[in-house]
Image (cartoon, rainbow, N blue to C red; front, side, top):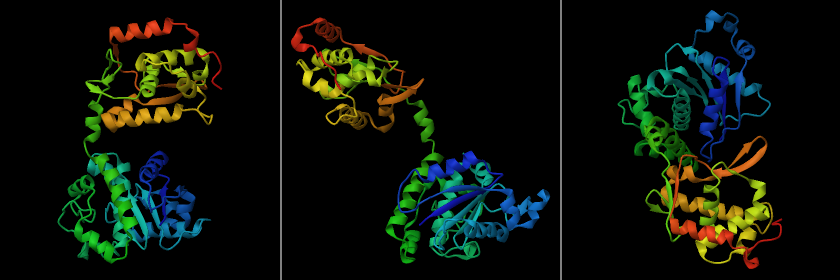
Length: 377
């Protein structure tokens, strides 16, 4: 199933891209292959009243659905009958509805959602696209909506709430819920489990945008990092319990707060510094392991990417998705130079004096058996 999203020129192209991006965030059975802004020339071709700007302050349902129908036959790519066309526009409709669906054609009145939910209209638009797709799959259209026994005329927080009173719409947006009765009706109508699952997953993703979770996340701050004398790395009071190579890589980047030029990782000086860090954590000479770690990630025997990914996974398992994101090792392009660094700069590192002394002693030990003296390439 494909959903073709369009808009009139009055709707922001950036918001159109945001709607497209939001709906594509969750992969699944439903595809959103393209977005397109319809020119006023095209709209005028569909409806001659657009020759006079004062005539299209409000459009009828038939006029809005006709634009969708013209779009179906105007595209080079064949739009199948079972595929949906969505028209987003701030132009009012004569019934003052948020949206409506008929014969797999959907229109969305964009500004309704900003006005009535006190949230970004992009989220409300994306949500209502799904509502109309779901209702169409159940055989409901704008003509049967008010009389349908499937639709909830008293709001229960289901996607299929009628929401005649606009104040009720926020309940539906916050729940992202498909009730058992509507789910059974969808199954009865032959809607596949894959499509139902995808709709549900997208609803849940958009639902989060209407909750106050973002306000909570805004309060989340990076915690300071500490290293005890045994070489255990803590974030706040939590021991990350990392493997020696993971500790080594994390410590190296923690010590390079401004970042490190990625291609210099394979230089002998960097490799020896990393080897010294490894020995401080592990107590053993790690020349072989460090040579593989410091090789260019593009080489077959490099362990850099594998170690970095394992480090990210371990931190995420220990701290959770949101807090761990601060400590990811990320790539940044600065003046056409690729820099690798810990994502956040907002941290302090407290190192145990005994650990620091051990590391400095190792760095000063120039015994040949501990020194890497050839290129990593």
